[in-house]
Length: 435
Image 1 (cartoon, rainbow, N blue to C red):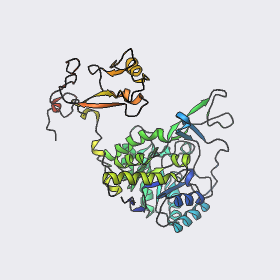
Image 2: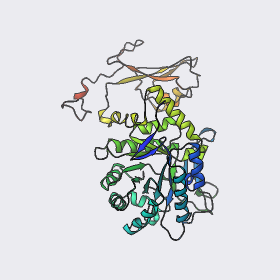
Image 3: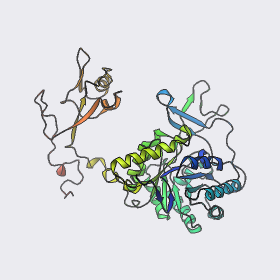
Image 4: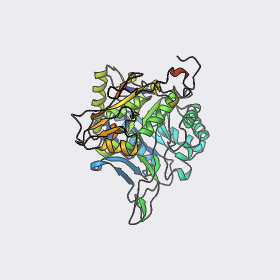
């Protein structure tokens, strides 16, 4: 059986599945249940400095986007950092680490952007025996208006400065949690790296309004007739997260910076994709809030079975495997051509492929009087829209054709032969030696 043991920046856990800093990790009761269910680690819900308590709203905190059959695709929240007293959280963290010494316990932190505030909280976190800290530079609502969260994460100079303060004042590994609410994720990642961060985690939530009540004209969730932007998470943000993780893994300035991947991890396949794009482990939130803590058993067994079938002995065998295959558009091979193929035995004659291609694409699918749909190779540009709108999995596939292939039905050449790709004008390396 594959070894799912994870060692992320020196923090060991029995598997790479951690719960992200969020309501599921807000108290000892939740975390204890999570560890009993099999989670490898947790990032404790964000703690703030001692002082006046945080006050959360006493109304709806979540907005949602659903797919078919009310499948939860995205969750928007307006909840702040923990509203429980600091001393209570510290006592519970210490108890959890004592009772579960083999699990990872990382504490998320957010305090005012002064060195004194950070120096004050770091020693009390160390006393709990926690394995590390995560600097919450990502929260896009509530705390950002107070000069914390994403207000720090959107300014690379601030990221580097606070990271340096923490590295100078604690023995614990420092993970910097990055906000996606920025133009280019590489700059905050570089700043964290320059400040000495042991790792980065991403993505935090995406600033959003999920919907508006058209009776009251109030954004959801609505609090006494008013709404606010919140943080969006769940399966819908996974593509954004994968791209940002890959961007950091590909950047020469941060290629060696460990990454904890966050954003829509719901299945073992999601986790494997994050790992392959450079994440050393993954953090999960929305899936646990949707299905409960025991979903981790499906994540563990699914990842283990897949690794076993592919001959991967350990998690480290997967990490970064897809990174060399991520490239910029101009490096894509224009001589690589595919065409759509429709399996007539699987086709249910719904006509979605025809409507989509005829109305919005390249008029490359024909329809007979008997509602038999077929691909017109000479018109097909291989966009694969038909594959994505077809309701029958595997009914439409893409077939690679060799350079200069001839359509047997028309006798026409259907593959654009661009000649030597190393000399093509779309290739920025044209005229240069290509490895």
